Image 1 (tube, rainbow, N blue to C red):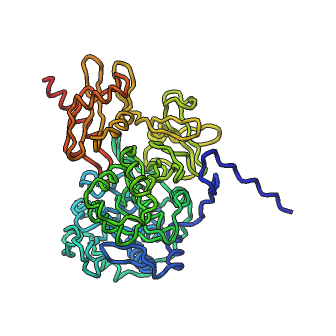
Image 2: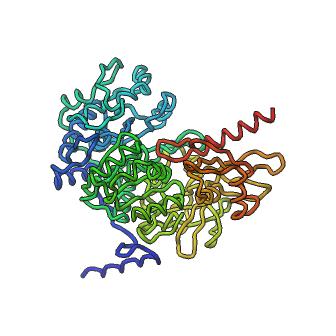
Image 3: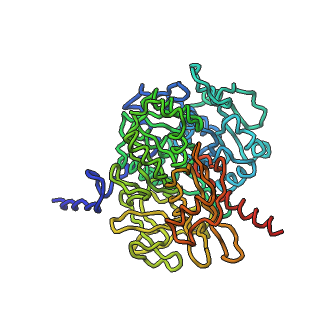
Length: 562
C-alpha cells in the first residue's frame, strides 16, 4: 500500500492559468538534453547563422568531436574551461563539448582585456580555453607563459559553408589565419584529429557553469551553478513563456551573458526549437531575420527594443510572427510598451533575474502583467522584502531589499567566503540570497524595482530612486532615453541630474523637462540639471551604463571645484 500523493500546491492569485505553483526539474545534464533533442529532431535546424543552418545532429556530432579533443588535452571532470567568443555556432558546440567532457564552462565577456582575462584565469583555475580568432590576443600572454596549457581557436567564417546574400561583420567574414601562438590549435584541426570522448559520470548536481558577475564592487565574482540550478531556471522560463519545439528564437543578446545564454541558447535547445543567431546587435539585420525566418520569440533588454522599434526600417518589416517579447534589467518605457501593444499587438513580458539565479527568477504573467513590474516570483521561488540593515521583513508597499530562495540559486561565489557570508542568510530553514536590489511588493504579490542599494541618491536626507525618475522621464513625449545619476552638491549632499536623449525632431529644453517633472514629482526628486546627449553609453547586453555616467558627473564637479 503506497502513501496517497500530496495535494498539488495552490498557486497564488494572478498566477498564469494552467501553470502549477512548482515544477519538476529534469534530473539530467545539459549533454543529455542535447542528445535527446538530436534524437528527436536530427535534421531540424538548431541554429541559423548568417543564412547557414546547423542541424541538431551536426551540433551533437561536432560537440562529441571537440569533447574528445578537450579530454585528450587534459580536461577532466570538474575542470574549468574558458569560453571567449561572440555569438556563433562554435560557441554552442563548445559549451556542450565542455560539459560532455565533464568540465565547467567559464563564459567571459568578449570585450575582456588581457588583464581581465588574468583575473578570470586565476579565480577560476581554468587551464584550457576555447577562443575566437579575433579575441586570441586576450589570452596570448597566458598561453605564452603557461598559465593556459591549451587553446582551441575558432574562426567565425568556418561556419559559413554557403556564402551569405547579406553583408556580415568583418570579423565574421575574416578567413582563418595562421596560428603563431604556442599551445593553440585551430578548431578544424582539433575536430579532425579528435578521439571519441570517454564516458564521464557527470551528475545533475555537478558544477557545469561559472559565469562572472559584472563586478559592481571589486573584482567580478564567479557564480557556481550546477546542471540542476541552471535547468531549474531554463525549464521554468520555457514553461512560463509557452516555448515549444516549433518556436523560432532570435539570439541577439551575447551568449556569454546569462540573458543570452539562457534565453537564446539553453532555453530554445531544451525544447528542440530553432535559434536564429546574429553575431552582434544590428537593427537592420534583426528586422530582416524576423521577417525571413518568421521569428516568434525574442528576449531583449528594453533599450535594445527601444532602438529597434524607433528605427525607420522596422516599420517596413513584416513582424506578425512575433508573439513573445520578454526581458528585464531596466524598466520598459511606457511609450514603447504602448507602441508594441497598439501597433504590433504584442505585450512585452517583463521579468527579473540575476547571474546568481541563472537568469529567470520572476516573471509577469503573459498577457496579464503589470507595467514596470518585476512580476511574480516564479515556480517554487520565495522572494521577500526585508530591511537592508536588520533583515526584518517589511510589509507590502514599503521599500526594502529583495531577498530570494529557489532551486535556481547558485551554490555560492567561487573562492570568496567573505562575499558568500555577506550574500546569504538562513530563515525558516531556507537559504536566502541578498540581491542588493531595492524593491517593494504590492497587495497582489507583484514586485516593483526601486533601485540598487548603491544607486540611491540622498538629497538633504531624502531618498531618491533614479529608476523612479527615469520611469517618469520615459513618459515625456520628447524623450527617447534617459538616465538619472547623483551629482555632489555642497548644500544638499547630492542632487539629481538627468541625461536625456531626445526623439528625432523633438523641441524641448532643460527647463521644459524640469518643469514637466515638477508637475509630477516631489520637489526633491526633480532633476536640478538636465543634460542632453546624442546617445547614452550601453553595455554589450544593451543596458545603459549608469555607473560610467555617474563617474563622469562626479569627475565634472571635481574639476569645477579645482
